[in-house]
Length: 306
Length: 300
Image (tube, rainbow over all chains, first blue to last red; front, top):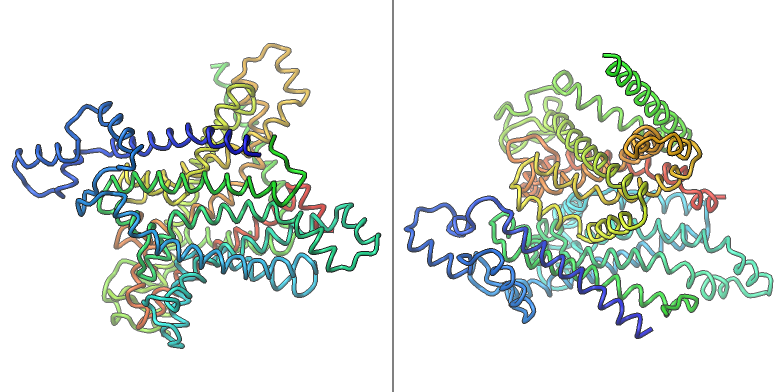
């Protein structure tokens, strides 16, 4: 197990190196002089441009910049934001708490709602509950996030006036969590249903029933464990997506967060932030995947990584 | 000349074969009522886009043709926006751009997905494992971040959104095509072709691609839906279509500031987007039912 973990961690290194190279390349592929982007098209003297170029280390040849970038990255230095001249990591991690809160809320909504709909539908297939729940799940996966967010605001803030549109604290987290969790909930519900249906047809379920286990033990002890493998995979994927920041939810609800930061940075050409954002979200994806793979072994003793 | 005629004859045959197989799939899909409804809805969407100039009551770009922000009425069934433009007309015209973006980016993914997938599946071995590694890393990029990166490089605008969405769709299709190629590759007609000494590119083009393409074309219907949402999201975030274009995502963005006073600015274009996506999802469910034998077993 530990050996496998070690092997996987070693395997992650080249992936991260490739991603870092790509992230570095993205900025160099942008047409035009980055210094011009930094000053935003205002006329300035050559001296100012040269100073800026030196300040952001853009005056060195590309290969030197590349090795400099890689070397600095290993000690956690990812450069300086073009916009507010602060270290990229500082700007970025200021936004992290907001993103983590929303991720927690969204995943919670996804698991609670998706779990309920999926489990009920899976245990009572082709009943009226199944049909109506699966219709709800279809709505969940078909609703673009920005539309659901705006409808929620319209209903709960504008018409019913229950929850303020913009607000901190717990109340301010409710609508964004629902909006960003809706898609996850629909997806999870559909997957859980089909996972349960698959498992309930297996021989070991028949065996469990044949030896006289009560249905609760059959479902909780035998079905749930086996059905949870594909569900975990999807949940990991969803979590990784949340780490990339729910740019749309954050925009609609005027929240802070990584997604909003990245979108703003693209629009305002703050490339070092974009560069780090690509690296961060991709690493989150890779590590969450690894964690999920490890979890498999705990849930299903048949899965052995050696 | 003779060579040319033979080539055009072959191309004709090739197209006929692919079309016939695709039509067969669509007919099979429509056997389920939900999927049939969704096909009709999608057809209506296409009609709406094509007939937009004929059916939209007003010029979608004409400003102040009515009072600003007027609520839905007989005169303006979906109300007007902040510049006094007719929302119904803008919504109808919006279908054009959504559809064009959806189809072009899906076609983009399709072409490169088929090329990558066929090469990977046909040659196998080292080529396959390297290509699939690349595809895995590619899939690992969060889609929105990927699109953001591409828009960063290429700049804002609809054309670049098509590229961005198209490129991020390639790996998924490449995987599907590869899986299909792996099974077609073992067929006896491919072996026969090898035996008579046909070059690899010819075997891929004449024997493998047509047999794979029909199901992949049907799958790209789903790709179109994903592309429509992604494009609308990018426009919503200000990176795709730019004002005053009539585009659903952009219309929602414009309506956001007026949600308190003019719900119609957001509710109607959003509804159009929602229905489109739902139709395609219904279609996708049916496809999965047909193509995935595991899914079929669990239904009964």
